[in-house]
Length: 90
Image (tube, rainbow, N blue to C red; front, side):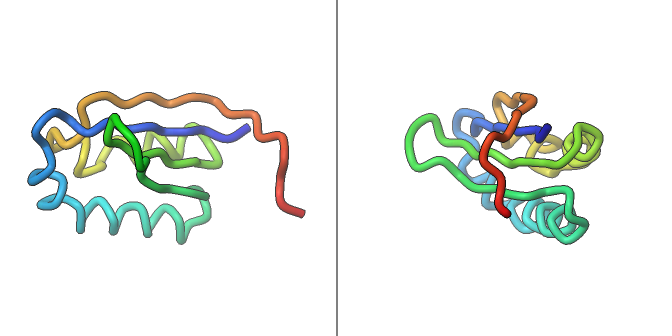
């Protein structure tokens, strides 16, 4: 089981996102280096947002607890979903 975190940008938060992106990116890099964040990326269509795939629910919860985007109002809505991956790399 994997855990998918999806974010939608809060209305009018574009400048705020740029301000807090370096700290947010550092957190992404930290979790990726630990092996608990597998994939992350932004969506090319509306609504503006992103998703990240984690290996465990506790990793998602830990990430969100101190994510600058959540702490500073960059994210309007977010959701965590359990994802049962069907095709896995060999």
